[in-house]
Image (cartoon, rainbow, N blue to C red; front, top):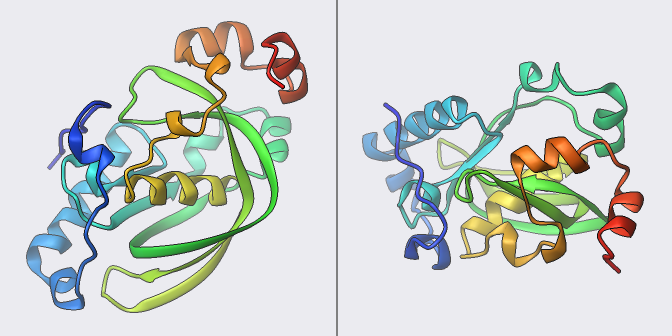
Length: 195
């Protein structure tokens, strides 16, 4: 079942989501929601989807950066972003600790359809959360994986990438591809007069 992805302006995207208990996580309702969110993320297509994006104020997100999504990207872009396939993950009640350098790349969002902007994010994130069974897990994310984690966890606390973006870089996805997509970040910032 595909879920409707709510767009910016919907109140659920601006509130703090509520945590889930282990019993709630194991319920047929949440187990079904996880599968529906996975299907919706694939269909979009996207690399992450948080429950608030489908209208539910729950601390639940799914992530997967599939290898087939990376095939069309130039190898130098993948290397610059430290982007590699990430297997399917479920993050429930996550807490993250960021580390590393802050780097800037264009980011989009399924709830801000048709736009992208340059967003600074840390290159590393340590994550403590519950998995799809309600079991505690911890992992370390690097590169693009860390970016995805930060983006999705932001959604669980009412933050959207436009709150963190360089406002002068906001572009439609069509214009991003046409005018800005191939430029190195330093050159892009220079042309857009971003300090």
